[in-house]
Length: 116
Length: 114
Image 1 (cartoon, rainbow over the protein chains, first blue to last red):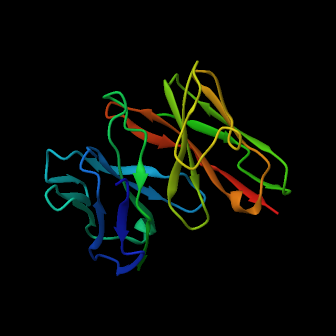
Image 2: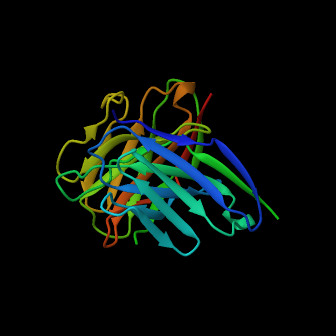
């Protein structure tokens, strides 16, 4: 019930291409879906997040697409750059006490490599 | 945003010993979260630490193995007790911040148990 499944495990794209990472969740009570980016030796950093009342959210080159009925969401990175090479984690959460989303369930991670 | 400092950044420990990881935040926060990231794997929540109360542990994690202290609103410690090689992981402290409540992570404490 608490799982978040992420695919692919690894992804190689050429500079300028589109990177797409997919996640599926089971718990319909989840109501917060962030994506985190992690560089080697660093902690994860929030990239973009979405709540289930919208189907898409875009911030610069990064877009989340959300399909509530299918219980799936995806990250699209447009015009991928070598600097985007990192590990990406999707996650899901439901509110603690109505306001806190700190208890995240993470996907398995995707290692993205963008070739110049 | 929140700035989180963790100590130590890395350590190599012997089996059977214990290590305490410190987490300092640059602002007062109600809840602090401790996550574990095993080598090449995802992050798993260990426990939630509220100031002035006992930490709440997730399934599979127990207080005897991972005692947590939360003496004030800017500081917490996680102890990994009686370590075994299976405890080799990155331990991450995190707090919520910003207007959207996003979770900020420290850079982690990389622990290797021999």
